[in-house]
Length: 271
Image (cartoon, rainbow, N blue to C red; front, side):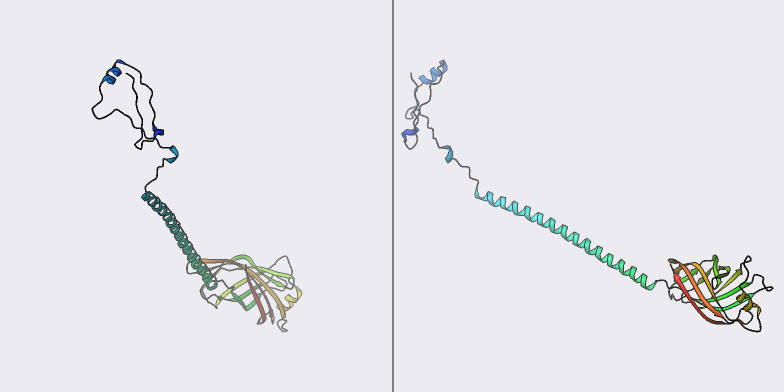
């Protein structure tokens, strides 16, 4: 018995009719094919063919809304994270700026309030001792120091052979500069410097005449130079360290008894 399968579309289009090849013949197949078809239901296969270029997979419209919401959420998240980082950076910059302004102001205040000023020196008296004419004399110089710093004390460190007395270009001797603690604004501190004459050098004639002549007072001009390391302090805080150099030019009425300071000019330099 020949097996034929009629293929037809629901619309009855003859282009959709086709036949299928015969299946292999087996005893089991023969028995199945010999069975009579059910009454009123002819045996047939329906195949619907649609061109491939007309098959579409269209996502539901709500998918577009979901994708758009995810996209907007990602954008907003990026904007929020960038905004937070920007705010943090701005806050840090403002804090650093404020700290810098405060530190600069503090440094400026300390500089202007506690800027060290050089002490001022004035001659009080000069006394010359000489055992006999021609022997090396000793020059006792007394100075008064004023501290112009109202908020800072001054610590003068001693300096061995830090003082020099000269007559014109001739050195009369060396002396030790004494150490001293001076309070803020003090103007009554006294420095006593003992100048020892050089034993290897003779006393200059003009100086010797001024020392020896007790009847006729001979005026003479001298120069004194001394150095000392200074420390400027506020209470226990040592704020500044400076090296002091003082040059004094002065003129006396005589180097014998009754010496008077006729003129003087002392200049102090800090370095």
